[in-house]
Length: 59
Ligand SMILES: [Zn+2]
Image 1 (spheres, rainbow, N blue to C red):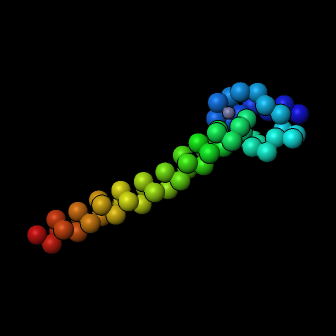
Image 2 (cartoon, helix red, strand yellow):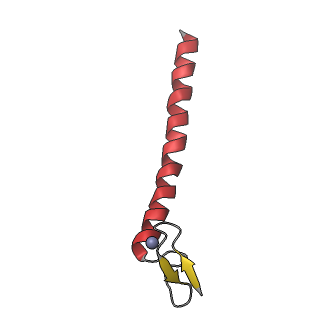
C-alpha cells in the first residue's frame, strides 16, 4: 500500500515503514515537535493575558 506523507507529501509505503504515516523519522519528529510547541505556546499565552487583565482590574 502506498501512502503520502502528511508532512512533505512524498510518496511512501505503509508496510515496513517504522515512521508511518510519515515517510521518515525526520517528518515524524517535525510533526511531534510541531504539536508539542503548540501545546506549550497556547497555555503560556493565556496565562500572560489573564494575569495582565487581573492586574489592570486591580488598579
Ligand atoms: Zn515526509
